[in-house]
Length: 456
Image: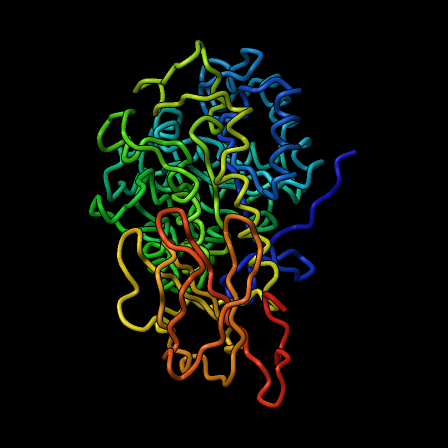
């Protein structure tokens, strides 16, 4: 029988996710949007593989009109008031199988434009739909809700969305909450490069904010805010709520594909997806979502050398099974391990630790620390030297080490000396040579750490 997973809730400080018994929960998700396409054996293979790789959430999208692997549409006659039971039994099986592998399922009932087609301005009908789908998964602690994918697509990605459109989206959320009574976490997914905070942060049903940083290797090169900046914006909102990047650039996606409409551009690689992940978490995110261009829709090559053209797809070119082992996917669990090694789930983004300019674009250095200054970490995306304002930690001696995001291993770093003025040189530098500098407080009268730190 599938095992029960502990319910999730928001931490008391409103910044992170925890289990019902108070244990920290680091969200590490994969976008399995179209898992409905997979027959049961393939779905089982996918879920088992991602669980072994350290993922603990999958984001799925049943949708409005797209059929499942057996050709069953979600609704009879495209009427959301008339669900097609064979389709939903298949979705139930996916949720149960995920639970058996220790994976939470974040369900996106419909994308924004699908809500527009399904309900128009009928908020009452939208609420009834929310109640119906919530009843289907009522009491399942492993189910979370992303009320809409790209909610602003209900208005062709134009902001602001209208009051009538927002009412439809709110009504779906309120219908969900009518049933689960706040026992299942809820968020909503915007278009790029945006957060949900602008439209929904103060809605009582919203447990945490989500952003889509978008499919650019370097967002600032496109005049867009990078994910660390979007996260900082959301964290500045009141009341405090957690936030995470629910759709950064997917591995092997052509850079800026939705801007240039060109699948022949350079591709996002392992270093690109690592940068997005570490930037987000060090900026204060409660976790991160990974994605791969071939995996989110479970692409299969029709012939050797195929590159999927727009508008059918953004340049998919590999079989999804093989792409499960892409470099970035295999490195994501090192980030989770690093964060879970911290003695406390409380992490404060603190750019004041970086002396001088923290860098722009691909050079941006992200810093965070413990509230009591017992440890700090700085992410250096290209392995360039960094000068740390050690006095900002409010501690005396520190022990320094390097964490390798490509291997998950630690190595010692020379202790800072007055002559070095807090400058640290990573072991290697250049594209793909990212490092995390880990600083831990030492007791003033001993070489032993004052408190157990990430490397202690």
